[in-house]
Image (cartoon, rainbow, N blue to C red; front, side, top):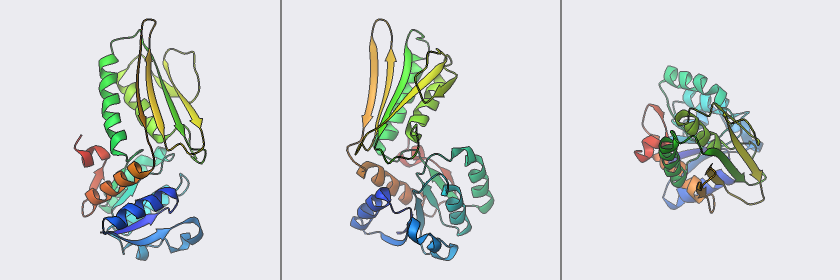
Length: 238
C-alpha cells in the first residue's frame, strides 16, 4: 500500500516506522517546511492519505485529498465544528473519509466500555461524574478529542448532565473535564463516578504512541479502495 503522510511530526514518524516494517511505501511526507508539496498531483501517488496536522490546516488538507480522489484517515482534533462541511464535501466528491479522535485499539474498546457503563449508570443519579485527561505539554488542544468523545457518550446516556466544561464546576447538570499537561505523557483518560457510599473509576493509560500509530495504519488499510464515511467502530466491528 502506498501512503501519503500529511503531517510528519511524532505521530507521522511513528506511523512510518510501523508501515515500513509491514512493507508499505511512504510516497509523500508533508511537514510545515515542505507544505508546498501538498498538491493534488502528489497526493494521487498514494492509495491512502493519513492526516495528523493541526486544526487550522486539517479541513483544507482533507478536502485536497478528496479532490485527488484518495481516501483519507484523519486524527487531527480541534476542528470538528466543520465536520458537517467535510462530510458533505466527501459525499459530493464520492470520496472516502475516516475520522477518529483516537486510533488506539485499546482506546476504542475503552469507548465501548464507557458507553456501556454510562448506560448502566443512567438511572443512578446519586453518582457525580467527572473526566480527567492528562497529555504531554506539546498537545495543542484541551480537552483532548478523546475526552470530548468520552464526554459526548456520557451526555447521550446520562440525561441529568446537559453539557461539559473544561474546568471544575459546582453545577450538577454539568460534566466537568479536567485537563492536565505533563512532559512525556502519551495519554491518560479516567472516568469517575463518585457517590456518598462508593467510588467507581475506569482508566485507559497509553504507554507510548505505537498504539495510536498502529491503529491509524489499521484504519488506512481498512479504508483503502472504499467509498463513504467510516469510523474506528467500522474498522474494529464494534
